[in-house]
Image 1 (cartoon, one colour):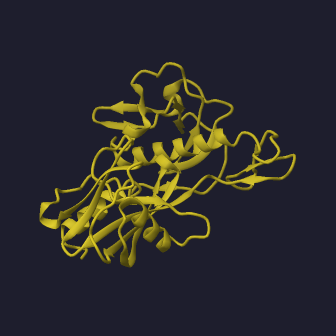
Image 2 (cartoon, rainbow, N blue to C red):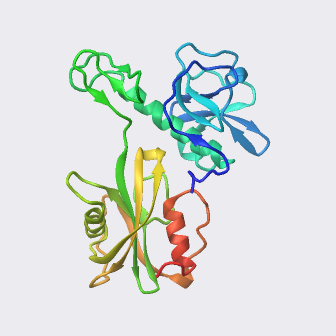
Image 3 (cartoon, one colour):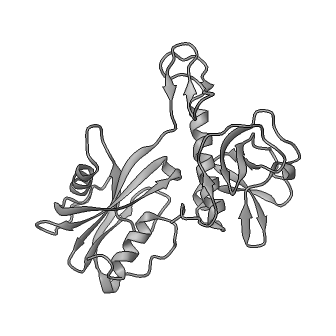
Length: 274
């Protein structure tokens, strides 16, 4: 999946320090991230390629020991660089670039949305101790936004339930998915979302694995479960345009190597999940 970038190292610890010319710049503008192209490969541009190190660069994380900093987006991309739409960044290679660029863009969005305190409206400042925004007037502390959600593979023998979204950029096969609500376990989220989206009941809910998904500020938890009762699908048409059962032998390979959804479908197709 997109976060599986070994042997490359993504270091999340918040260790702020001044940016240098050799550090990476994360520039976000109009829903796109500035990337540098070298043949078939893409990389975050270094400040040296942009011509200057901004005084207001904010440390985000490091990639293979090199700092990644937010930076004001230049109006014109430097030679060899171009702005890549966020939705397309997941497809750039190598994978460590895609993951770092999307995670960097996620943090930039959060910082921009927390410039002012949500309680009293005063200008917020960055904590000197941790990755957080603090209000100097009332003490309100805000941490990066993470929304827990589930991805659900509903099976019925050798059949898998697939869905397709109605009004989202992604048009391919999907699984049932949804955000957890207040006071709800992830297992209860699975049951509720399946009932709401496709009108089915499920049993034997079991956790598979998780994935950070920067495109929607989400921490995804993947679950497999089995149909319990009737298999008639009743769509929540405001969100989905299709819901259908597919037999294992009829599934096409899902080996994009990026998303939890794709991996879960592929594992069922290969017979690794009953």
